Each structure stands twice: as C-alpha cells, then as structure tokens.
Length: 216
Image 1: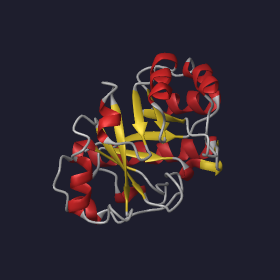
Image 2 (image 1 turned 180 degrees about the vertical axis):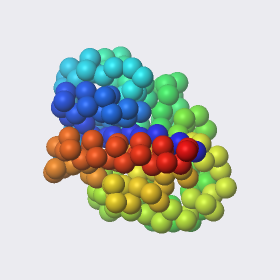
Image 3 (image 1 turned 90 degrees about the horizontal axis):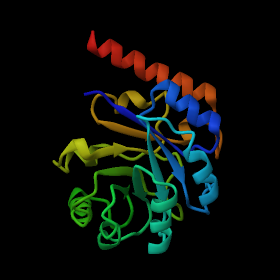
Image 4 (image 1 turned 180 degrees about the horizontal axis):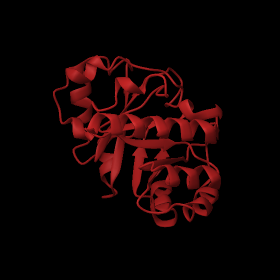
C-alpha cells in the first residue's frame, strides 16, 4: 500500500509551492483562530491561487457556524472540509460537501474500539476519518502520539483512515505501507506556525525512498 501525505497548517506561498514540487498529495489551511497556525478567511482566499492540481486543499475548521462553513465553501472553494471540533453528524452532513471527520483518540468518550465505532457511525458520508491524539484543551496539532493498536480492533475499511498526531521523519515507518494516508504538521516545523522547508524536503525524500525500496 502506497501512503499519501497531507501537510497541514501551511501559511506561506513558498510552503505551498514546495509541497507541490515535492509531490505532497494534500495541504491543510487552518481556519481556527485559536490555533498558532491559523489563517484568516481573506488570507486563505489569497493563498488559494497558489495551489496547483493535483494537490488537494483541505480546510480545517473547529466548531464553525453554518454561515462560516458556507462562506468557506463559496469563497475558498476547498476540495474538502475537515471538521476537527465537536461538530455533530447532522451538522457535517447538511452541507452535502466532501468532508473528513477528525477523531480524537483517547478522549474520555473515545477510549475503546466500540466507542470509536459508535462515534464514526454518526458520520456515514465522511470521505475519511482522521485519527489524532486527544489533548485536553486542544483540538489537535499538539504533536502527541496515540496507540495505533486501537485501530486494528476497529475492523473497518482502512482506506478511509488518515493517521495524524506527532508524525515525523523518525517515526513514520510505523505507518508507512499500513495506512493509506498520513497527516503531519508539527513534525515539519521550525516553530508552531512556521514550516521548515528543509524538513519538508527531507521528509518527502525519505517517503519517496521508502516507497521505491518497497516496490523494487
């Protein structure tokens, strides 16, 4: 299985252009004001023109209003909305728009495989489920890992899985070839909100080398 890569929290044109050159499959804009990686709506609109196909744009939101989501869809035109807060299934489904649902593994109500299954069933039309580690008081992007073993117990379609949470060049081997999509942010940063172009290059070079080795 070839693993795709999403890099989240990009905020500069040079990061976006490099991601495209490196063959990154998707990038994420964070439209959550409390995040250190946040963009304003106007900033996201301005950066949108820097994205070249086939790289996809995912816009991450946390507990937005209906009007805010509709404005993002209308003005930013992302390929996917990533709901990363406490949005209900009914809320996410109402837009009839491609979406990913974040699952905060380890939250008080999401500690077992049965709890995860019940939660995921509320989002029947989610394209993918992005599994991230729960961190009290935060909605992701904290660089915390979670025990991947809980996903094995789900016995669901792994093609809908995205693995996030503390992924970097030193530990990515744990997920390469096992899961179809990974998401990273802090693992390619100089500091929160500023991506390291060197780390981006090194990470993708490593991914491509591993993929080549596995197909020889």
